[in-house]
Length: 585
Ligand code: ARG
Image (cartoon, rainbow, N blue to C red; front, side, top):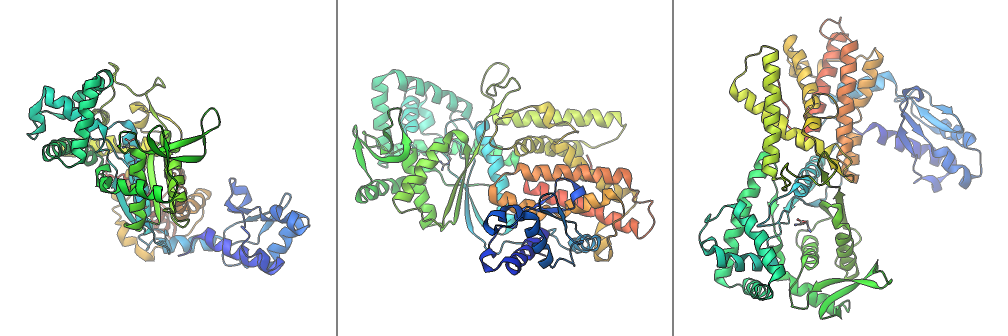
């Protein structure tokens, strides 16, 4: 079925043409859901925006539009308010029909896209031999959610993990390991990853202090890049080890992403530089090859360079991203490429996109977007650290979330005098703990920094995963209590709306398609969280005010159907966030 707002928009467009002629065929009707139910369901502000071009008073314009609106099937007669707002109230019969139809639709009114695209979501992307940190956690959670939403809409999504598996860090690390732990370069698992990260830090220190070590590292990179067998083998071992460690995190989060690291593009880097040269975009600056940027200047107002080949001949992060961009457009045929990284990389992407565009590698019809996010902070508002001041290991962080969820659950079980199996407790703790971390991240506007608080994210009240999971459980409780099989309600269940709280819930249920569509466009998952949070609240109000199992027919069946639609909407919405539901908790 076509979304309500889409139908209203097309009716408005027809009315605008009928009233003012073809020139107005593409005028945006400026139609939005009203914030106050007193004004009905939707409001259009188009009359105000047309006052100037038409040279008429907004109220007069509104009157002409209303005369041409053919909305009798959907809405009560439109009302004109204030200077010229057009207010629309959906008819009860329309709401009831839509909801009745929604019951047999597994997609709950969210249509498959008519223009499926090839979309690449570049997310997670930690660096080999370094610890995966909270920034990568945000990228992993947000990227997965974006991918899920676009997949659900029917796009062909390629999830790519652009791991940092190439470059100077390996020269450094291999040189250092050759000195202190040569077995790590020849034998799998000779050292553990914790050591590897510690070795990396020491190697970096040596690199910064010792010129001879720097030179040795540089030669090591050259050896690796030229395909030296021994270097390659050592590199492979180091990558395997990190990769296994990353996989532990992906498994805990139940997130799938295809690895295509920086090394994949290595053979393409020299062409990037050569082609930029041919295009006349390349200049030499202190021995480095670079493209001078438009709109990026230094303190003296001179254009900044984007370096694509360093004076020692090495390539860098930007060169790799240029090669990746070309590959994704030419070989993967991407129509849209989404990069999920911290906001600190905004300039990097803007610069890479600019150079690619100037080189003609980035056609206008391909949409490239950087999806930035803010920092994760501790409760003190500073960078997240452990009590002893160390950087937090993701694994410890996720384990702690699960442990705390387990402790909360065990306390509740005891309080309520319930008997539960260890399997039940483990499963619920796992789902609640991990979901709490995901939801805490997704429910914030991603561009702001967010404060990581176990207490807040695990609270049963508020805009949290436990609250949402609990709302779902509550509905399942109704079906258990009344021994109702929701699936048997089927298409026969006719929705009949009576109480205010039923109307509020009904209208909200019908907005899922709008929300999914919006998140698919502007990539802000917090909108979906907010929608689900409001849904839970509206459901709770309805359930507090309207008897369900005790109600007389036809209300009993209708209300059961509303319960079922709420549960299914929660389940679908949460699944798009990467969160599973529980039948009991
Ligand atoms: N490895 C990078 C980092 O840890 C993120 C890579 C993001 N993707 C990209 N195509 N540059 O910051």
